[in-house]
Amino acid sequence: MRKRFKKPIGVKIFKYYAAVVIPFIVICLFTVSWYSKNIIQKEYRHNIEQITQSAHESVLLMVKDVENVLATIQTNKQIQNVLGGTDFCRSHMNIMPEEEIDELKQAMLSIDVHNYKISQITLYVLQRYNYPTDDNNGVIRSDTAVKNAIWYQNVLKSPDKTRWDVYYNDLNRNSYIMVSKAILNATNCQPIAVVRAKILVSDFTERIDKLTIGKTGKVFLTTESSIINTQQNKYISELKNNTAYFRKIKEKQPFVIGVRLGNIKSWIYSIPIGRGNINITSMIPEKEIQSSARVIAKFVTVMIAIAILLICIVLYSVSKFISKPIRILAKNIGSYDLRSNKAIEPITDDEVGTVAKAFNTLISTLHNLIDDITTLHEQQQMARFKLLQAQINPHFLYNTLNAISCMARRYKATDIEEVVLALSHFFKHSLNDGKEYTTIKNEIEHVKSYFVIQNMRFKGKYKMTVDINPDIMDNKILKLTLQPLVENCIIHAFKDIDYVGVIHITGYRENGKIYLKVYDNGYGTNVEELNKAINNSEQSNKYGTTNVNQRIKLYFGQEYGLKYFENDEGGLIAVVCIGDERI
Figure 1 (cartoon, rainbow, N blue to C red):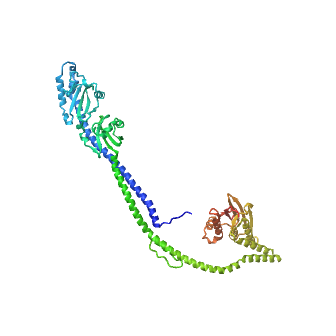
Figure 2: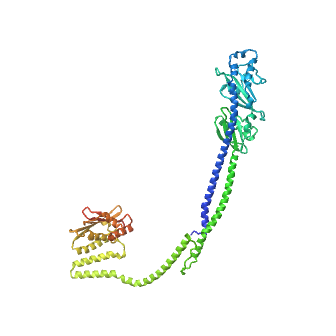
Figure 3: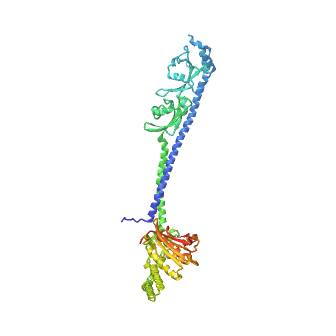
């Protein structure tokens, strides 16, 4: 047998509360932690995007300023007249066209490029072989020396685009950005020159070099193949070998990507600037984003520990407060002396007090039962003698009826003898040795005895026929099931009729059930009201049939019972449905 450990109710209450409340609090706090972590990360990334957008707008203004300068030179009428006009044939002479160069210089110097932090600007003229080719002159040059340069060829391949290239030395000092754009002939849209502006990287990036994201995050510029600024930053310089990042750059779309640089995983947000090949990029280590989330996680962990401690203290106090009156009540009940008639005093007005009052009521009832049992015991002693006397009554009744039958036979009173024998059989079946059940065969014999007595009284006014399937004669039936139905036919159905009343009893088995039907040819009645009456125990004038119906349902089940139908030949049909059981 399994051993049961007894525990105080306070401990059980504490355990049950703790099993429900503590997991709930822990789940809530972890949910808050997880949600806060996600919110912090989202806000952090949103701030990165905002800083990058702000830096993008700042750099975009500089880019537009530089491109506007180049566009101004491209559309300058004086340059168009000199390079695209009728003086083009002078380029094939062996003389230096000083007037033409001076004219181009005046056109170039008319634009204050220094306001846009352009340190140098050069115009490379196509098919001017007698123009200077070295860098001493500076502003106006022939394209002879740069014809094979990749940047120059790329500009002529896409004359409608501005090209940005970065050049820097190993120490990242005096690094510069070269911005190139083709000048097209306004007449035939053919390239006639290439203007190239030189900008120091330090001048171009001074607005974003001071920007930081968090503690170690950086904002920097990149082209499709290189990083423009912060080359001395070891963390960022590792990005130059990351092919996935530069592959995304070439798509010319803003993007967010996670990369691993050494042992550091970082998040990168990048936006292309204008229509050029430069992107502004922000990069921050993921651990820095998560550092705030870890602070939240540590805080939540501490709060969980404190909450669990406080909850345990509160639950312990509550369990003691709740269990105290229960313990007192249990102690009072455990030490209660049944011989005393003293009630337990309720200490509270809640359910515990109700239990105390119920215990007092139980004790009072118990004392009353003890008194009743004592009285009943005394009455039983007196009743034993009456019971012995009452046991001879059935035998005395049978003996008396047999004596009357013998006397009737002696005096040849056959009618009296018949009715006395029928009455004897009737009582014998009614008593049935105290048993509630009998066979259908015995029940039919009982009905026949009853009908003999009634027919003797009414001088052949009624007839009865029986047609029962022999296979069901040994089936079980409650005694006094059919007799009340036959009695109803004689008392009610045949009342005041001026013809012979006929009762017909049939019985058969169908679908696992036994059906017994009692037909009569009386006046009949309202079948619906009759069926309603026999299903209502409060109908006192239908006591016999109501009793039959209820007894059948109690023993066999609610699907069985008694029901009346109209007889097509007049009168009613009482149908009894019982289970298919044998004794």
